[in-house]
Image (cartoon, rainbow, N blue to C red; front, side, top):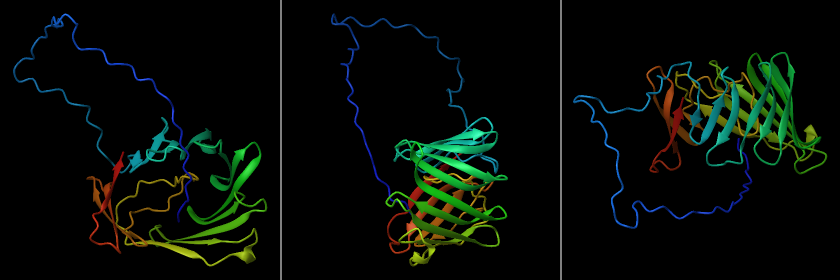
Length: 265
């Protein structure tokens, strides 16, 4: 599953002030304040040591993708260091997300719930101007179907259906993606299948927070996949089993060095 991204950029003018010389024009040395030497054997100052990673640690960064949480450990922001126009902040009512505020274009998304599950979401690009409608279906706590109606290029809408399949451990094995040429199901085209597999037995810390939507409480991956189509994955881990780094290689280019993605908690 992929997204086509349209990049916007802006350039702000900045005045650069001249640097201040480090000594006066007379050539006299700048007076210095004497310092008291440390007693022998005093260890040098060290930066604060981060807390150890545990199975309850929250994922704060995955490569260029950053997650920010509030004091209640709720996700409140998704951002990207390389694509700063992507991402969103999350508004809550009680413990339920009710709105995503996207970082560009004035877009926002409103959730509808049945119980504790999001069953519908509508994305707007202006006041009452809809560009996407999503419907979600579940089996237990697993997402099994996402139906999208896109109005980005058609006033009548273009229908898309994603169907999700899992293994016995609750790990995603397939997404079957099908798009229609209209808003009618009978005009659906040929499906595209994305496959995952060869999972380890370590916990996967990533929430369902993609660039277009966040689904609270939903996980596609309980463990860490060994492949996604032609991409091959291997991992290093922290002591409790949480992933530390992911190494990605292409099956079609075995001699190309692995791309390294780091997990921060």
